[in-house]
Image 1 (cartoon, rainbow, N blue to C red):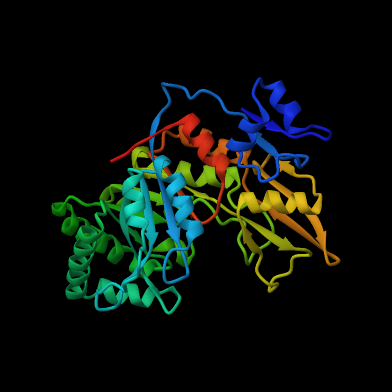
Image 2: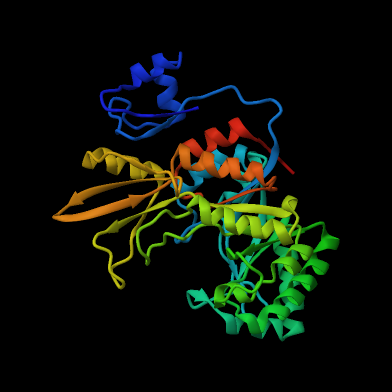
Length: 380
């Protein structure tokens, strides 16, 4: 159940209305200051989970930019691990000769194992800080490099105790479409005898021939046939370099997923879901400094600080608010209990395999509360 805070309400009056107490509401919503609520803020009111709820898979990517995973990320991994099937440390870059660029997981493997979450070896075609089609093509055209890559992936999976190999190759272009499919087939054949599954990240397409370099290299139907499951990246309509809008508006998310399940079995499809929002400075102009990324918790703290009322866009199914700072207006689009509930309802409607989150560095406690109320989480 979700309650939207109205002017004059307190946590005490809200708790009394739902026959609970302030301490419980503060705990499940992880409110840093229970005495200060924001008008328009969505509170999750805990309910008894349905014993007949669906079982789904859940995945969360874990990305960091330091030598070791920071304490804040490790805290989220330890807290959310019980609600995750997979945790995917992001990522191993593949060199043109097929070798993997090493990076340290720190204590992620051990923390995941203690929570019953499986890990994956994530490989990407990133070179010099960006996704590279030329790197990918060089790899696709070199069988010896592919063989080396497969050997190193298997060795790393054994070292880390990983159960899945996850491929996130992006911006491939149409010229690499068939080569990428063949590459994935060879990878699948190479890792399957070791008991490893294959998952693949897909850009958010609405048709098989959708134009654009991000889309054209991915054949949904062919990849869906090869992979054990796919992650459809249904987010970033609102992005840091673009105009203000919801990061994952429900209409476009539905359009992409309906296409996906028309060519890939629904029991192979993970919905992608953001755990973050953006703070844009207005007026937006192309070339402006990028919007600031922030978690739902940070967005609520900002709304409290700036005394901003939260609004809800019923079409996008997403919350937002405006505020002023140093003479400039800002708008923040983020996620809350209402927006994630709308995504979970769509996941149920389409009978998808599960949901994949980008990424665990952003605290969003309501997501995990509603997830456990609506679904059983599969453990491998």
